[in-house]
Image 1 (cartoon, rainbow, N blue to C red):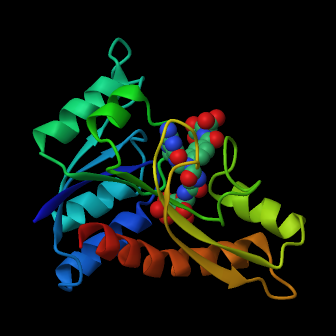
Image 2 (image 1 turned 45 degrees about the vertical axis):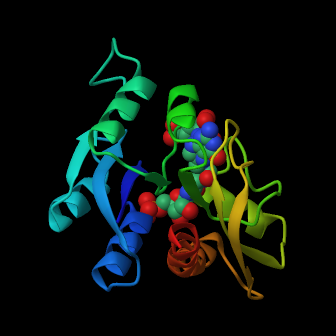
Image 3 (image 1 turned 90 degrees about the vertical axis):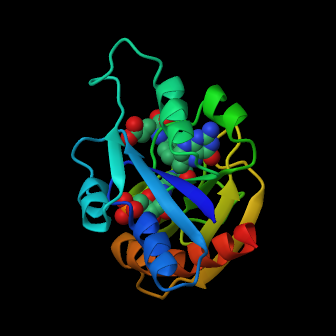
Amino acid sequence: MKKIGILASYNGSGFETIQKAIEDGILDAKVEVIITNNSDAGVLEKAKKYGIKSFVINSKLFPNENLDLKIVQTLKEFACDYIFLSGYMKKIEDNLLKTFPNKIINTHPAILPSIYGGKGMYGHFVHEAVVKNGEKKSGVTIHYVNENYDEGEKILIKELELSENETAETLETKIKDLEKIAIVEAFKKVLA
Ligand SMILES: Nc1nc2c(c(=O)[nH]1)N[C@@H](CN(C=O)c1ccc(C(=O)N[C@@H](CCC(=O)O)C(=O)O)cc1)CN2
Ligand SMILES: NCC(=O)N[C@@H]1O[C@H](COP(=O)([O-])[O-])[C@@H](O)[C@H]1O
């Protein structure tokens, strides 16, 4: 059974999607550990709810430590096979990339490659830009992570069409619903 480590900065909705798919027998895997950079992250409550060990790793708590190495050390302690970025807002750096080559998976709330990826394109900013530019479609991209933001090999893309009166808020809700399907489908492919 493959072991998954989670990195999240906020609510970790993607993590909960994976956890529910595991509990429903859809994914043959186990979430071993959750790491966040944000001591107020909602994902910490979710970790408690599902009985999964969690850690806050950031420069405020560990001012004199290499956070990249500390994250690697933690993920290795739990013998993780895959790392899933469930709304993680920090750059994945060299040690993590080298320790888990082609094993770090991210969900991005837009179609990639596009102008809706890269530095500054995260969370609500993505949906605001898509609506502002009058795009007719958007979607979700699940991809492996490389050294640059949102440029890794694609695993799966799911698209949706914007409605006439779409707002960034309504689009974010639709994208998050689409993400639930995309994440499970992508992990079924990866774990096969
Ligand atoms: N090496 C990589 N690291 C990360 C990737 C990746 O593809 N390669 N994906 C991101 C997730 N992400 C989009 O899917 C993303 C997250 C954050 C940013 C961004 O611009 N962040 C800001 C800082 C925001 C903050 O501190 O709250 C920044 O870098 O200025 C872009 C894309 C996760 N890591
Ligand atoms: N560029 C990365 C990015 O924007 N990721 C997005 O952050 C959200 C996190 O939501 P959550 O905190 O509710 O899980 C998710 O929708 C994810 O696609």
